[in-house]
Image 1 (spheres, rainbow, N blue to C red):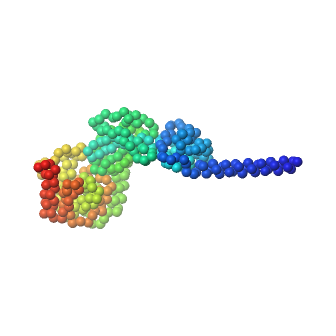
Image 2: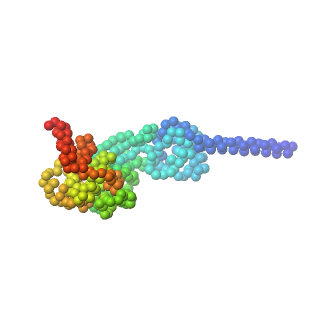
Amino acid sequence: MWRHIASNALTLMIVVLVALGGFIAWAQHQYSKPGPLAEAICLRVAPGSNMARVSEQLAGQGAVTYPTIFRVGAQYAGKAQALKAGSFRIPPGASMAEIVDIVTRGGQSTCGTEIVWRIGVTRFQVQVRELDPVENRFVERASFDPVSEEPPEVYLQMLEPADTRFRLTVAEGVTSWQVVEGLKLVDVLTGEINGIPDEGSLAPDSYELVRGMSRAEVIAEMQRRQEERLQTAWANRAEDLPFETPEEALILASIVEKETGVPEERRIVASVFINRLKKGMRLQTDPTVIYGLTRGQGVLGRGIRQSELRRETPYNTYVIDGLPPTPIANPGLASIEAVLNPEETDFLYFVADGTGGHAFAKTLAEHNRNVARYREIERQRNGE
């Protein structure tokens, strides 16, 4: 009889173990297989939250079918205590394993509200925007100029939440003075900036900001990126360029940046100036004259006077030979690369063509015809 009981007990134990093994295999499959989410969602994890609460949120939003398996899987993976506060985009069909990874890997929020401070050549702008998780793109909620407009209520509200993302974008061609003035208006930054950084030393780019970061830290990162870009481009430069140092290349890159906003033209515009430098011709470029008048502190806001074109200043390239003493703006990577690997052309002149681009010429006679053509376009536009 005891042998019979033992045999039954063993059989039962085997059945239980098999069933348990089957359940574990099923649970593992559920944890790793694609989930039920049909459209992407934005999951907000509040500070102080835990996996239990998050699993219920996910179940309520249709992202997981079995919250318990989600919690146990996170625990088994050793990630239950690594939950990060923030807003996270959960893509459609994300498995529980993928979701656990998203909410524990750290870094900036990937969903929710973002405030962007934009330092542009002609204006400063602040945008409040929110990610549409389904379209995976930002939708603007508010936009204002902090110099002349009061901040809207949504901006003040979104400054406070811990999961709001902050970003700074700096346009190609802004001056160092404009960057410093813009940083003064970024509410989440701290500290003062001692002086104006060297012109051209700041990289136009997009920068992730963290609440409490110092303005000096942001400037240092801009300088680091620009130096890295310049040195890399210099190491890969073409032969027979009229530059002795990377700093001279940076000066010409800033001029190219101010002369054209058409990406396809940068290397051609660069070739014109390089051809002129090689021939000993003056650069004769208006943006340098304007910089000599404004020193980069805002826009001129009017045309250049003839007396200003004749006045000898370090930046008047109609009067001086060669390059001006410093850059006249902060050029982007494309303009730096353009002057260090320019197009091979015989062009010595260019003028606006009325479409936003330029007409290029090899001879002064051809250039004068292009100028006359552009002036006629201008007269027609003005109804003369």
